[in-house]
Amino acid sequence: MNIFVVIPAYNEEERIRQVLDDLSLLPYKIVVVDDASVDKTSEIVATYPNVVLLRHRLNRDQGAALQTGNQYALARGADLIVHFDADGQFLSKEIEEVIQPILEGNYDIVFGSRFLEKKSDIPAFKKKIIFPLAKLVNRVFLGIKTSDPQSGFRAMTREVAERIQIEQDGKAHCSEIMAKAFEYKLKIKEVPITVIYHEFGQSMGHGFKILKDILFSKISK
Image 1 (spheres, rainbow, N blue to C red):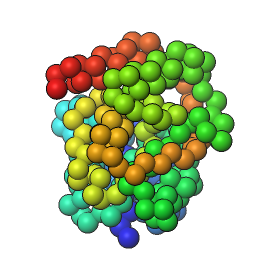
Image 2 (cartoon, rainbow, N blue to C red):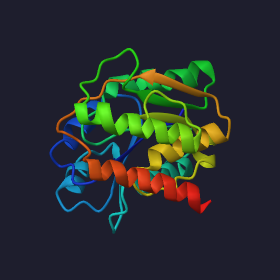
Image 3 (spheres, one colour):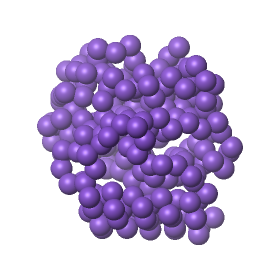
């Protein structure tokens, strides 16, 4: 089975080396989409002969980078695609746990969750304000019922990646993918993941931008 790990990256020169060192020990095909970084992200990625480097000429944000990676993986015969972050928040060893429901349980798509058995040291602002608000919006406007409203760690089959075209270029792609998975009545599974926060994370402004993008997308349809 061809398993591709797609990693969107923007100015991640400080942490992407450790991410790629860890992933290189695993039997997956790695694709990094550099979203027009202005630091040494691409230079670092290019030193890994087993990693495919794709580059956007203009910064288009995370959702667009993931769609670029999906298209590349599908064109190269991917059977399963994993979305993973470049900032070291996720643990590469947990990819096996995320893809297991697809390999053994015939699930279509799997979302990692910070709110199940494993404990993640979630900043209070995110935990008490941003995430509850995002869950409410997801449930009311998009019909999404998941424990984690904005997880970037997910896995999907080839058929799902072909069907779900990511139209939200920004961070709202997380909710978009979830919404389409529920709309298409896919077989969905959540599994616990660990998230390591290196800094405070999204500001209130970023949180409301995601909310605005989700609502605009919903209204425009």
